[in-house]
Image (cartoon, rainbow, N blue to C red; front, side, top):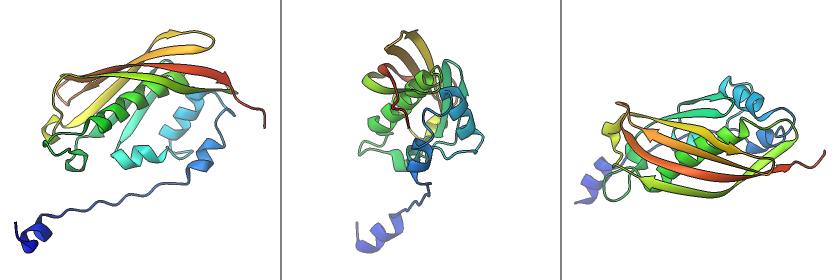
Length: 172
């Protein structure tokens, strides 16, 4: 490929985000569900990772979160399909936010693990991806959530299970 052909084939993408410290400072001041609903409603900024991957929205409920993202060329690996790290990011986001949706004010969480299974290749032909998270088990100190990634036609593409540590946040 000549330099001219490479220049013609080049694509670019820009995105913006809000300082994540603004949202992080609010963690624990309301319930996890209230925080996620405020993000959905645009009252507080969503985390920059959602802009980075091109997520277009999410629906939080207590114990269930759904994340949407159109599969795009900029997600591709050298094999011509969406990179597994992008898929894992969606699965982790849905599972982690699902745990977050169950937490009262003053309580936080962190992921301990993420076990991921890739079922089918994801490409731009997959359309708008839907990643659904749900609680499997929630105790006082740990929670287990699962997430499933579907293409626009409802076909399962990947799934994951995540264990999260639940802890009290420091008092301000």
